[in-house]
Length: 330
Image (cartoon, rainbow, N blue to C red):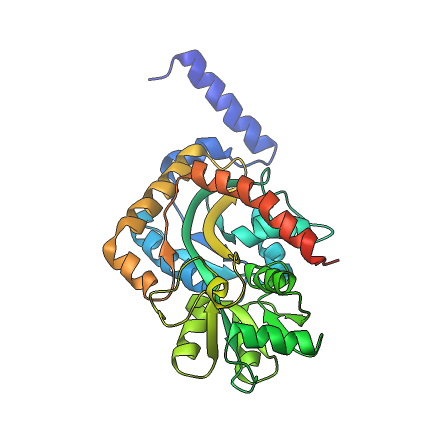
């Protein structure tokens, strides 16, 4: 039992918060967390690679936390809109962000004004998955290899279009890195997410795209898109006959991305620890790993410290790519 003086102090403090119209502070609420549903904000439209992985981890967290984890898609500005929403949300553990290395490491260099600080405004929880992109073309495009794409686009600067899921995403920067290293120029066509970009690519409204493997794979396997290369250092086991970009004509090319969960800064440490621990257990589950692996993801399940370190390392890396490409979004 608390000492009577301590008890009196607690009562006074509680009354003071009530008089001020304030909620009990987050540190006092974390003991019974979670006591209500959580929302996981996905800063891209439904159907893309970020959304797919968010729904998969959200479904598993619903089981481990005993509370529903609902997905809320808030697309736009290369992920900045959804990211800002979470940065401004109460730090109580009930609003989380399915972020990407692109949002935190690329957008600050790409956008003239970013409405959040990727280091100060968030508490890292865990990197959930990593993956690479795949260069896919509409079948009408007269190129059957990376070398042919380079020759074709070099011969006609600005004639061909390359779609992305939004300015500043890994899909966009994969294309910028390709153009920079190959010395070619294509017209970048940004969309509000991978799904609408793929829809237009399938319809032939744009020529090609460096899409995340999970969302491009079904269309490539069905023959609706022509898969020419993957952006990582190794071939994808899901399409072992498709070479890497480096193998196929651009030695040294390597562009990947990870997706992870962040919370608003100052979210109680016990909440962060609980989430990270649950994600680690989910990531270690063989059925979960196989299910996402079959869709092109590498399941990670990092610690909060590892995620924070990765963000710090990725920021200067991608800042250089953005600067060298000359890409900028106002």
